Every structure is written in C-alpha cells, then in structure tokens.
Image (cartoon, rainbow, N blue to C red; front, top):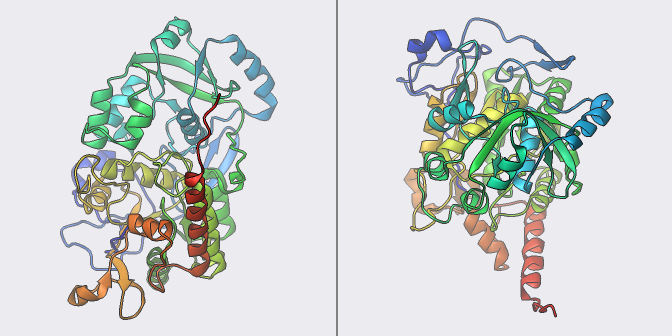
Length: 477
C-alpha cells in the first residue's frame, strides 16, 4: 500500500458550529500545524489544558491521560473471576446459540471495550443507527462514531430454540461456554441492505461477505454481553493482544504526552517506517516531549492472500531489532478486530477503536481498508476518500487525524522517500500486492525497501507456502 501524507492537526471539513449542542469535549491541542492545513477547514480545540481524566468501570479506576473513551468510560464486560462459577452454571441452563470463529473475534472486541460504549451485539435500534448514520446517539444526546454494524447472526432453528427466553448462552466453535447475552432482541437480517450500505456495492467476491454474511442466518440476535473469561487464542501471540485498558496503562507508564496509532495488515517496509518516524519528529517539533507510536496490526480475519498474523508479527519484531523503529518509543500490539475491506466506512471503525485504546492521533494513508474491485480492474474505493471521510466523520472530532503525502522508492537515492512530483520518473511505487509477489517469486525488492531481517521472514514464509502447495494431495480411502 502506498501511503499518503499531508499532516494537519484535527482538520474538519465540515463546520461543526451548527452542531454545538452535540459537540463532545476533547483535550486542547497545540495549534501549530505540522503541514499547511486547508484554510477552509476549521481547526477545533478548546481552551482547557489537557488533564488527567479518570473513569470508574466495574469498580476499577482506568486512567486516560490523553483522550477519554467514547461514552466517557471504557466498557469491560468480562465477568470477575469470583463470579465465573455461578455465571457458568447459569449459562448452562439457558438456551444456546453457537458462535462461529468470526463471532468469537467480535466477542473479544466488545468484551475489552474496543467498541465502547457498545456493551454487546447490536439490537435493532443500534444496528440501524450504525448502518445508516455510522454513529450512535447516547442518552445524553452526544454522538459517538460506530461505522460498522457489530451483530450476531442466527438461523431459524436457533431462533426457534431460544423461544421467549430473555437470556441466551453463547457457545464457542469447540462447544465451550463463552458468554451470556442478556435482555435479547431478535430481528430480521436484511443481508442485501447490510452489504450495500457497508461496502457501497453488492458485487460478488467481497471477502467478508462471501465468508460470513452470505452463509449466515436470516436473523440477528442482540443483547448485552457477559463474557465468562478473557478470550484467548493460545497461538503464541496472546501476549501481543493488549486490551485498551492495558494499553492506556502502558502509555501512562511511559509518560506519553501524545500517542499516534498506525494500523496495517501488511508487513512493515521502510516507507511505513519513514512515515512513522517523520510523524514523531514533527510532533517533537510541535512541542510534545514524548510521543509514543502504537504500531497496531490487525489480528482478526483477513483475506486469503494477506500475510498471516504470526508471520507479520515476526516481521515487525525484526523491524524493531534492526533499528528501523525505536523500541523505546514504539509499542507493538495486536488489534483483534476482523477486517471488512470496506474502505472509508471501515476506516472510521479503525480510528474509533484507537480512541478507546487511548490514542489521540491517528495516521491514515492512501486507500485505507480498501481493496481491488472484486469484478473489475480498478480500486473499489477512491484512494483519497478514506482520509477525507475521517476528517469529517461524526463522533471523531476529538481525534487528531494525520493524513500523509505519498512515500515511494527513490531509485536515485536508493531508499524510500517522500514522492517528489518534479522527479516522478525516478520513483517506483511498490504496493503490498507487488511486495508479496516479489517474495512469492523469490525476487528481492530494491535495496532500501525493507530491512534485511524483515524481508528474510517473508521469503521464508513464501518458500514454505510454495512447498506446501507443491505437496501431492493424498485422497482418503
């Protein structure tokens, strides 16, 4: 993915003065822009000095030095250990709904507060707001961003078995009890409407749709979650899966005065590193003393040709080992959300979740959360729309959006550099698809594109993949 950088601080393309009653308060920011801002965009900040915000959730004080979570408190619906025995017995007595792997990923997301203030799978009222407005209106009339419906689909048989019960036990793919869904509501799952409004197309071949929506049941089950124990995957990567609460504590431990989040689903190349390091330098120039980078790869479902999470995490480790990024000012953690590839709609979810994790700056690149059109030879979304939508998105006013100008490979300097239009013929654009093709074909990218240790991880992965693909398939008797 080539990334676009044009850094401005909290640019808002719409004038929010007409929504004064609904404007959420957010920390004051330094008004000096990193790059030139659009004169038509009002720069929003108030006169309060950024302070320490504290919120009490389930008896625990969660400190938020930089930005408060959506709704003011960080949702935590994991049952305390002292209550797990009695809650599990209760769950065993309830009607059951079986979860697919993708549903477990969403239980994980909800349980730790990534989707705060959402406390469970959406009921119809929340679903319609998310689907049609990309936001939820709170009881106090404030608005929080919620661009993706987080829902649980069930089939006719499950609906029938639930009957008139108000609560349901949720069973994992292996048959283990994972949660209770309280005060449930069952409503119709209009798949065509959901797909059209989330992706802007109903064309065949959308990965998330093909895998999870098309075969799903015709009903949606909403309610408040009580998760019986923390979700673990036991894949050797659970120590990377830091919750929003854990991340906020780590930011405070490091005494961060700014946290800038960078999401990716590809291996880190030197163009990514250029953007991240340049962001930190610019924040230091603005007067921040200790900006911390949250390098936050997506860890849920990704499409089949994306590099698997375990390989990406090994590659990211090499990037830090090789000194491309500074371990002292970088936190690498896994974002547990599944990937929709829904472009400007989905990038709002990615940004909103990082607010709940404690990040007050979000880096957005070219065509965020995008993909090629499934039936035509073109991008599904305009590559500039993601950053434009983020700068206007309702409910994200307190987050500072950092769009960047393009980084590409400078064939003269033999390194990744910011694209210079006056020397356009001397730059080479290497997309994530092209990068994967290099590794799959055993070709080396240009020197300076990626650190050697990181590239070696990719080459070994594709060598192993090709060896597995070449193995003869033995038919079972």
